[in-house]
Length: 509
Image 1 (cartoon, rainbow, N blue to C red):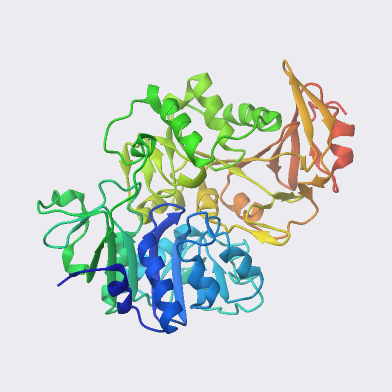
Image 2: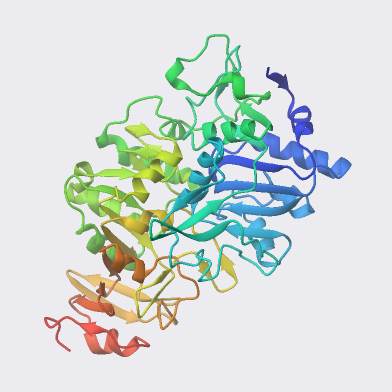
């Protein structure tokens, strides 16, 4: 039977050495008060310590002094297993300083491994991750020099086929953020942007005889409709009520509590942009890339659009009218609306449905997407892509590996080079004023996020759209298939590449 507790009382259920699983998604739906209470307890007593934290999508609030950042920095955590570290500003720096063990697994594979534990299974099989950095033959999931655990990802063979087998330590504490608890302890997520893997996490924790702690905005006397209850009260040990901070009406557009017609998506998105740092400075290169990439969309496509440069695709799809003819999706579970970005990435404006995250990744892993648009830090001569780790910095693979693993058409959106790149448009012509000093096309990528070898096996169509040209994945690596008006193919492209590429016969050299 659940008990209503204060944050400080609830976190006393956490013991030294526990494995905590979080349902947060990058920067949203964090049970902030529970994390703050853990820090207060640790600061006062030195406990809980030796913690392991598992989070499929990462956790943080874009503030290095809030949420879990403080107690991680102070030494309460020994191991992190996350899909994404982007919103954890302090933690991702400490990872590279070898302060604790840290592992980066594909977001969807962590989600499925949690669901496996919920069903009494030790792990989850997947083809996602084969031939990229997480594959034990390539390197494995350890991020830093003190992360040797080789039990998380194993190469196995089933019926003469290769798979990766993803396992997690047995999770025995759940920290969840929900909307409301009724008198029986049932938890609804009505005002939340997503439900993530909340149910699977709680089922796994109870299977492991652990503690489920839920932070809610309110406690209600009238039960929610059964279909709206995500976590049944029989799985809950502690409920902590914390009145939510006041939010601008723009944020309410992300809860699904009222209908938002397609014609209003942009209005709500602009309101959000003013409050979530999603407005970017005018970027001519991004405009060129977004316009060209959006031409790959077809009516009735099921689509995922990544953050950063790919976000320009949705703007041009709206201008052309194509946005109303496709179905957008986001990793956190939303289908059929307009994905938000910035600090509320993972939420969706006007979603038609919101799935559990594991179900969303079933769609991605089985090739259910027609097309996706992803960013890239580096591309090599073979067509491999690094999207998650740069020199001295990383964000994590997130859902990128799952999304690109079997999608029929994969479009990478990136500039040809960066740092100082200056381009402009004159009608259909591209004017290259200055090249950047850092190349994006390299002989060998630092880490493999997307495998060209695996793309060939899966017969995927792969494009690399830049501000001056388009490459496609050919049989032997990159092939130059399109050069924009105003660009000299030899001087502005081929002479700047550190390797030779096949050139389509239609291109004049």
